[in-house]
Length: 291
Image 1 (tube, rainbow, N blue to C red):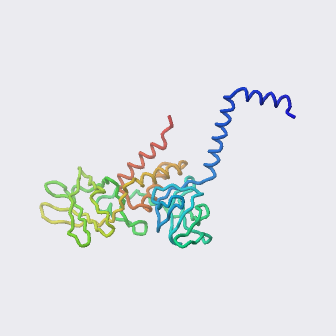
Image 2: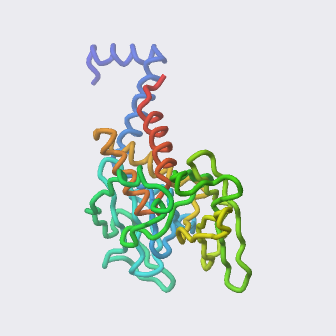
Image 3: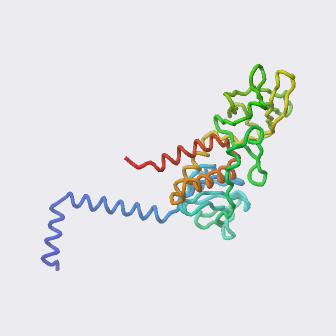
């Protein structure tokens, strides 16, 4: 039997539809918070091998988002996914010994995979800030041998050493096996050299060499061989934003070092000027108070 007080309270709620609507909204929001806390969010930064989502058959790529309940299809036991987990760090994900082995794939739910937290030391990025051409294109093979190439990439050079005027200029020589080398003049402005993603060939066997032509001596000097990784969809920006969100409690310099390290390891060595610009913009956007 319902007591008089309970009946009175029920009657009050039923008589006020606004209270019922508010309770439903609060209940819905509570369910959303619980579901968000149960499932970890992963942002993919690098894939070794070929890994697909079972639900869509789509191949993972840098920037892909994953959840704990996603089922992954690994092509071999050696496949690995490098991913950012907000608030937890960077993890290396591969199929566990318990994964289901089928004819064409190794199948396992993400939360059941073998996950190892990355213990790699951070690359400071401080030395790269002051690097000039050609040192700016020197990479560490043990970290990543590629140079990250976005749509437009600025690099500083010493104008006393490379006077890009009166006919002297930087150039990119692109060599495809079986074809004649293609030489492209590069744009400069003051002490800044610009490399564009459109300057490079996308063929994996193409060889790209940066050089400088001296109009006075009529001689060309080879400066660097570049292994480009073309970032056509701004994966660098996605990695930076994900890490800024995951490292909110750290100071700006620490977050910047973390971002630089992960961008370098996952995608290749970026232009220091472009990286700093992208990081500062993302940091300001994420840190700006909501209106």
